[in-house]
Structures are given as C-alpha cells and as structure tokens.
Image 1 (cartoon, rainbow, N blue to C red):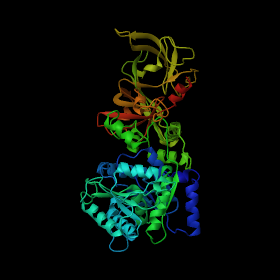
Image 2 (image 1 turned 135 degrees about the horizontal axis):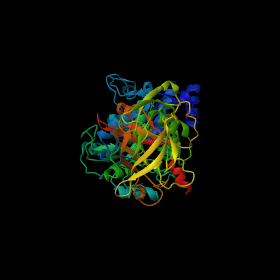
Image 3 (image 1 turned 45 degrees about the vertical axis):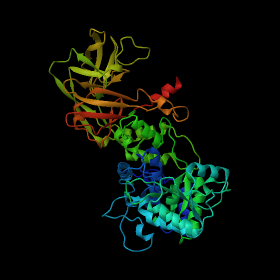
Image 4 (image 1 turned 90 degrees about the horizontal axis):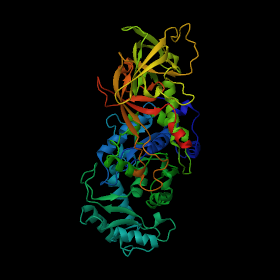
Length: 582
C-alpha cells in the first residue's frame, strides 16, 4: 500500500509542528498517540481524518498509536461495533502504519501505566478499552474524594443541569469525606437505583467554562456492558475516563476534534488534582471533517439504517468506511484525501468533489479498462459475415503501458449503450443516428441504415453497415469521425448486475435545514443488468475497473460464480457540476 507522506511532500500542520518541537526539545523521547472511538456505530469518513492524523504522527515520528474503545456508555455500545471498527482500522492502515499500531497485552506487576503500555503482542491483537481501566479509574475517584475534590450528589440530572446553568452549588457539596466515601462505595455495590446519585468533581460553580462547574464524574447504570458484563453498575463519564485512560497508557499527545477544546481545562484539572507522576499527557484539538452531500453524525446514520432507508451500515451510499470500502473506494484514496484536506483549527465544509477527485485521480492511473453496456440496444452489422468472430487488440490501461493488452471478441451482432443512439438528436450530437456514422472503439466505423422498433415503439434493433476498411490500427483507420462509442459482442457477452450508486442527498448540507431525511436522493441507486465483455468473468475484488466511457466499478461481495455484481464507485466526470450550473 502507498504511503501518502512519501508520495507527496511530508504533511505539515500545527499539531505536527508541536510534536516535532516536543521531540527536538527532549520533552518526550517516545511519541504515543491514540484513536479512541466510541463503539456505538460504524466508523465514517470523518474518522478517517482522525485515524490518519493519529497514526500518521506515530508513523512519521517512529511512535505508537493505540486504538482504545471509549466504552463508558453500556446502553449504546455493542461488540458488533467493536469488530467493525477494528476491521476498518486494519484495512485503512494496512501496509502503511501497521508497525505503529499499539495493541493490548497482559503484563505482570508494575504500576498502572506499565501494565498497559500499548506494545504490540502476538498473543493478543485486540484494542484497548476504557473499560479495561474501570478499577484504576475508580481508585482515582476515591483519591479525589479523599483529597476533598469530589462529592456524592443526590440531585436529579435535571436539577444538576439547572444548578450548573445558574451557577448554584449543590446542597450536598459539603458532605464530609467519610460520608462521600461511604456513599461512593455503596453506589459501586449497587445499593441505589439509576439516577439516584452521582459523583461530581468539586471545582467552581461560578467558572465561566461550564465544564468546570462541578461536572459529573460517575453515574449509576444498572446495565450489562459488552466488555465487562455485569461487573459494574456505575460508569465514569467520558471526561473522567478520557484523561485517565490517556495517562494510564502513557499517551503523550492526545489529539481530539475541536468540540473538545472547552473540555481541555477539565482534562488538565483532573490530572493535576490527582498529583500524578510526570510527564502528563496534553490534549490538542483540530477541526473535524465536514463533507457536503452527506451526514456525519453516527446517530443520524443509525436512523438511516434503522429506518431501512439504506441497506445496512455498509451500504455504499453511506459515508461509513465499510460502505465506502464496499463501494470500491480504496484505503489509499481515503488516506490521500485525508492528507490533501489538511489539519486546521478552523471549522469548514469540505466539498465532496475533493474526495471524488482523489478517487478519479487514483483510478485513472490504476483501473483496468473494460467494455460494458449498461442499457443495451442491439446492433446488427448486415455486411459483416455471419458466424465470423475477430479478436481485436484492446489496451488495459493507456496510463500504464505495463498493464498490457487483451483480446476482445467482435462479431456481427453487438450491444451498444442506449444513450449512444438518438432518432432526432440535438445539434452537435456525435453519436449514432439514422444515416449517421460512429466509430466502434477498437473496431470499425459503422453507419445506421435502419431502426426497428417493438410494438410499444421502443427501439429494439439497429441495422447498420460497417466500413470494413476502417478497422482501428489498419491502413484506413484514420478516417475522421467525430464520435466513438463502446460496445460488446452479443455472442460473447456475459450478464452482470450493476448497481449505479450516486450521492445519497440532493442538497450540499442536508443537516442545515429541516429533516435531513427529506433530502434523500430518490435516484441514489439504480440497478441494471449489463452486458459485459467476456474477460470481466474473471474480475477480482481487489482490482478496480473502468467501464469505458461510463465510470469506475468494483466487484461487490454479493458476487458469486456465475452471478457477477458490480458497484459503481464513481462516474468518469462530475455530473453534479452540470446540475449546479442549471
């Protein structure tokens, strides 16, 4: 797999500049980052930016990047999501930064940090989990209580929110250390129902930053956990588990998206209040990826799945990594895209055209050319001998002469694309028309002599004659004909189901106004039975194919011997740009 950092100039941004200075100054001798998704859904292309940044920094500075499941919310998290996340990460970084992947291992003895250092283990290839640290995190909570920096609060969630909004202290804030320790232990033992009590940090109810107004650290949830089962009935909130998990794993640079910038003072306060041995991790923030013509919220993606508006999390119309992989987008395209858009501190909307450009740029260089007709119309060349078959030479990829050539059968009866014929065409129409001529790619110039229609008036067959002296590559092949179209020999064609995917939404920002589901593109999927050249019968899932003049396609996992299924990854040209100009 390609490495974007070596193909292009090494990326440069403010976070990498910070890491480089920390290494130069000796602040850290080993760079250690992490990618901490919550396993409550499938990863999407927004996570690609975070993965490539965190693994990219580790890769470029010879460090390690841990994958840690932020699994502190048992009611929304599932093992299915853990498995999908790991599959997506391994696919995305395979052959690029696998050597920088920190994996969970067992260790005997040592302090809380050395037990979970994040080194690769051949025996355990699993991710880290925040739930791996529930015991030490609870011990840290006890320490905060002992230091007078946390208290057990009996207010409801609604009361807590209201008191924090107006800056009013909880009536339970001044409980004694002994009382708080007793209540916390009883919370852990399961004595109280959900919502009855919380553990809160004791900071400053007048702080301008709302996240410092005595935030909740633990809440009661009598719910089974996908990783720890029924071992716990109290669960730490993200802000408490996040900074301590970073510390336990020895993370040096904790890179988050920009919405966590206001959380950073709490991150620092918690670590400082526990008087932990140095060095401490530090949090840095960057602008998340926002992409036009899609939604990036896992909650909204789940709605699309649950409401059956798409065919599962790996539907090729979704921005999920598994959906894009199924559509035919390669890991190298996604990595290249993540490097191209860069890392900034300023929120912005990235045009989906940038992603589509990255696809076309790679596939133009690498995709094998093949002939396929999506909406077939039969052509009979009346002056071509019946029963005769020629094998014509076709180039596999004009951008890569090393890809060689192949033989394409040609015969009297062919299929051409329905859109390549019009009875009454507009001006400057250079495809086939009654009495008009076009060149069949790799073959002859043909002239339409007769149009045969079925009982409904639909074109059923075109009878043509060929200039048999105009064969491509022959002495008279340089006849000037403006139109060239593709075709497939009817006698040798194989059928394939082709799924023509398009953008899922009709507007650039479906999230910005009203119900996002009302903007779903009714034409985001068209399924056709195509006529394909014979060599596509040996198509491989790891390869990409350009159906000439149509777009780039990939084999779908639904394919079986004798039943080919192709997905359109991207069209050859941006058809949406034309619509935008209308």
